[in-house]
Image (spheres, rainbow, N blue to C red):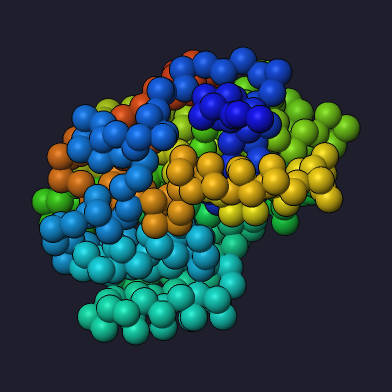
Length: 356
C-alpha cells in the first residue's frame, strides 16, 4: 500500500503539542499552503519544515530581552525556552507544574551555564491564577519584550474550567487573552524605554481550519450535548489566530511598538497511531511503514519549536504583525481566521468573560 504525502496529510494531521490526530476526513480543506514535505525545500525565508529552532536563531544575540513562555515544562515549550535562553533571552516560564519547571530550569542551566531562566506558577484554566501571575510579574519590575502563548490542551472529554468555561476554549484562548491584556502595559513601557519592538506570539495549529461550523460558538460555548472534542479544539485554535489579528489592529491604532502573530508549529510522529482505536492490535507492518514515512515527512521537537523561535526573534520580521506562519515562512490562514468582524466579536466576547 502506497500513501503519498498529500493523501497522508488529508487523512490526518498530528498537532505538535499532543499525541493525538486531527481528523480532516470529510472536511473541506481550505487554503492549506503547499509544502514540500518530502524534500524539505527552503521557503522565501531561507528556512523550511526541517529547520530547527537552533538553526533559525543562529547568530542572533538577544541579550537584554525578557520573554514569558507559557507551557514551558514540556515539549516544544521546553525547547522554545531552551533556545531563547541560549540566545541570551531572560526566560520566565509560566507553568502549572512547578516541580517539572524546576527540572527544566536545571537542565537548561546545566547545558547553558549563562542562561537566565525563572519559573512562575500559572494555571491557564483559572482566571484568578492568570491575574496573580500577571500581578506578580508586573510587581517584580521586570521588563517584557516577548510573550509566547504556547500552552494548551487538546481534545479532552467535555469539562468546565474553574470559571465554568469549556476547558479547551478557557485554556487555549481565554487564559492567554487575559494574560496578554494584563501584560500589555508592561510590554508597551518596555518598548518605549528600550526602543525595541515587543512581540506577542500565539501558538495556534492547522486545526484552526476545522472548528465548529459557525467558527466560534458564542451562544453554545458550554453546550455539553453538542460538544465535539475536535470541533472545540479547532475553535480554540481559530480563536488564537483571531486574537492575534484583532490585537494587531488595536495596537496599530494606539501606535504601540508591539506586533502580534500566530503560527502552526508542525506535526510529529510520536505515538502517531496509538490513539487511533480502529488500528489497535492491527498495526503490524503498516505501523512500521508509517513510522519510516514519518521520519521523512514530519517533525521532531527541535523542528517543532522553530517557527515559534523564528517569529519571536528574527530581525527581518520587525513590524510584521497580524500574520500567520508555518514552517518558518508566511502562510495563509483560513477564511474564518481572516474575518475581521468575527475577530472583533470574539474580542468583546472574551472581554466580557474575563470581567466576570
